[in-house]
Image (cartoon, rainbow, N blue to C red; front, side, top):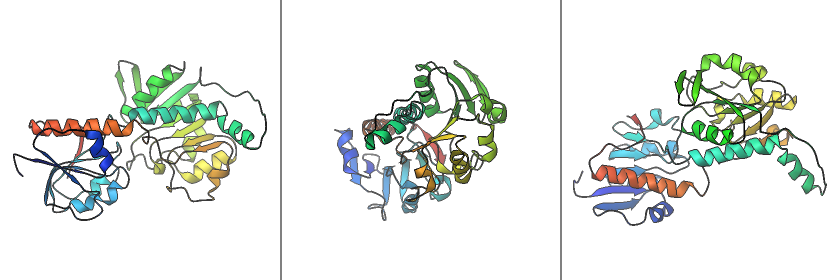
Length: 308
């Protein structure tokens, strides 16, 4: 590749506009990865936000130095990314937006906002008392950047937070339990927030046994990936009224029209929009600019998660 020009492909013009003026020596190409690459050598390829896993095959035969995702999660990429590429995720871009949506889902369910909206649509004034978020125990299943951002916001609501991750450890906030502690911890949680990456280990983790360990009336929030939870188990526990659900992700996704989860009064569903807020574009532009500047200086890119 040319040592004088850094070639960068972007999937949409909005991201190019958000980047503003770039350093000398940077050439920008628009490529949404819907077909073959326009040139055989691209130093930095930024993938589309949605559907990237289905498009990385177009990188076959293309020489790159870095493939930059616009998502934090990268499930499936390891098996689809052609050989010879370095892949980075979008850590630092979505944590705030995802934490905001998580709190919105929790508060909407806890305070009955969905019930009030339905009553208003019927033209009814329907006062009711609901559970607070304050004084609840919230279990965070998965503790990366998103989990940390959620915890920071939960603490402001005077909650008790239990943190669980694949590997037990301690940090400045105390104990992070391992997955092996879940059977004991689930019974203590009023609210469970699922934010683990989708792996062989976590696929189907939230099953009937998992949900049965949660107290009656507890709330399960899934902001991870749909297949982390068994949809039939979710449906059974929600239909019985034993567990409430707030889901930003589902399996299948999109959830088909007429799916019974849509009709349940104790289920809130958002269409996988955890990171889709006005915060995304400027933060994504900041990350891309950081990668460009590091590459121009000959430094290692940040957020590298895979090398194929």
